[in-house]
Every structure is written in structure tokens, then in C-alpha cells.
Length: 450
Image (cartoon, rainbow, N blue to C red; front, side, top):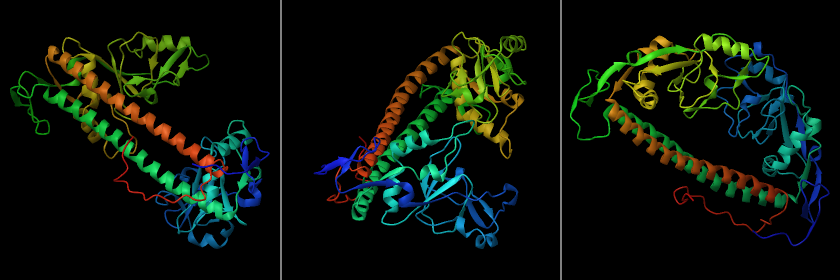
């Protein structure tokens, strides 16, 4: 992309040089800034005027799950009415600085701690919406936060953000350029995400086939005795999990003592992609750890963990020595290795044979939880141990290949998102000249993956 012929120092380090004919002014001169109204949660209704809260500030705002207030309130709260084209900013909490453009025609009201930016004078709403997606804006918000237990930023602070101000016609050109370029990148990113989803489905399908039908397509089959399971290899047995396990128990039913951080205390949220993420888990004291070891809350090598609360069905194979204990949200399964190998058990627990049973068992429950008894009585199919070894080897090889592809696609998405942000920053701060850009037709069928 070509550069501008003449530049000058903007006087703002984060912006750097800008084209000679551009200006830099504070946000408060280019946009009206408003805070939301402090709605009381006990006044919300099921029908009425939607209220946009921090949780509703998403790339695409949907009114379907928003809280509502009575329609007759609208006349008294007209100052907090959101218009199409308004830009919304999260002003507090973990998502501070998160932004979205309200592009809906339906009326909605602004909740407390959500800020509104409405362009004024000769400033273009599309240009501003891209400006606040830049790293410069994110860094500004980070520096301006109050800090403390919960970070906050107000309209006064937002008003001090320095905005590049090109002539209005150039703002339109930049908005058109970025709309076109980011749409192309969004289509490519979506294609890569679809490929990841397809690979994940393929992984599940291969696991399902291997743990219920085996690897030999010519194997002699027999009726499993279950209509939903169908035929299984003749030498395989249908059994319940409790009959191939030496121990099925859960973790600690007490809150961990965190007065000293000596040993990991692992719960459901720490189970990631078949492994335990020890980096962010809770830590407990030595005395608490020793008590929980005595009460059977410490997994051993060869055990398989299964999450039974919240995100149900996560598994982790313990194939290493480490001192840690687990919470009651995790089931500890010690397989009888004369009957079933730990690796094969983990694959079985990840298969639809188990997941479909579990979903049926918790169907209709407001609190997602499954009991140890129901997990223990889950039906699984058990091949001879020598076949289990072959299946485990086959599945590990397959998963490694597909996981490598998934990791590559995720990296490509990350790089494209970083490039997208960098391109937006270059355009809105005048590092590239897009005045002569001709928008390219966007055809998702013609866009190929890199």
C-alpha cells in the first residue's frame, strides 16, 4: 500500500507521524460521551425495552437474552437511549475496554458501567469504531484504569484519548477500505474455524469407531445386546465401568485451606484437552494436603480423572508422579489394568458411548452434575488387552496428526487477527494512503485458505 507524500509529528507518541493535512484532537471534541443508568436488577422484566449491560457488549449485539424494563420507562430515560451507530464501551471489570457498535434499529437503554460514544461534528462513526479497536486505544484504557480490586474507567478519561482527525472524506475512504479488507479476513478466519471444527468431529468419530468396533473391518462381529450399540467384535465384552475399576471415588468435599500455597488443589476448571493445567489451579496448605491424601483425594499413576460438575466429561490421564489432590468436582477412577488399560479407559470416556449416556442422565437438570453412581454404571465395551494396546497406539498417532493440524490453524487465525489489528492501526493513524483504493468483490467461494 502506498504512503502519504508528506507527514508531520502528531505530538502523541502512540500515534507517531500523521499526514500533514490531518489533525489530532481529544475524543471529547469528536464524540459525545455518556454513562449508563443504574438500573436495579429487581426491576427487570421479561418483556419491554432491552437494557444493554456489559455482558451484552459483543462483536454482534443480540437483544434476545438481554434484560428488559417496562416500556413506559422510556419517556423518563430518553437520555440513556442507544441509537443505531452508537459505539459502546465496557467501563469496568475483566472486559474493560471491550467495544461494540450498536447497529440495530430497535430501541435499547444503556446500563451503568457501559459507556456510549456518539460521533459529532465532522467525525465518521465507522472511522471511530475502527479507531477504538486499535492497540493504541487498548493501551490507553489500560493506563487510565483506576486499578484496585476492580479496574474502572469513566467518560472523563475516555474523553482524553487523542484521535487522529483526517478530512471527513478520507475517514469515509478509510472506513470503506477497512470494511472491505476486514471482511475478507473474517471470511478466511471463519473458514479456518470451520476446518478446526471438522477436525474435532473427525477425532471424535475415529475414537467412537475404534473403542466400539475395533480396527479390523473384517473382524467377526456379534450382537452387543444393546440396540443403540449394535454389533461389536466377537471377542469383546460389554460391561459396566464399575466392574473394570478397582476404585471409583471423588475428591475433597471441603474448601481447600489456602493460607499457604504448598500443593496443587485441582478441580474441573483445570482439566484442559486431556491434561491438567497446574499453572492456575488453587494451592492448599501442607496440613490440608496431608489430610486429603489420607481421605483418598490424591490420584495415583494410572488413574483417570473425570469431571462430574459444570463442564461434565473432561478427562485427564495421570501418567506421571506429582503430589496434588483433587476437588469433589472430579471423579478418580483406578482401572483394573488386567482388564482395561488407563489409556483405553480415557478414550472410552471421551467417546459418544459415554457422553451420550451422560447427557441423557443430566437432561433437564438446571444444575449440570452427574453422580458417581451413574458414572459407575455407565456401559463400556472392553476388548482383550492386546487389542487395547493396538487401538491406543492407533488413536494416539491419529490424534497427534490432527492436533498438529489444529494447532497450525489456530496459529494462522492468531496471526491473521494480529495482522487485522495492525492494518486497522496503520489505516486510522495515516501510515497508509487508501484514498484511491477500489473495494474488491467479496466472494467467500473464491477465497482459498492460506
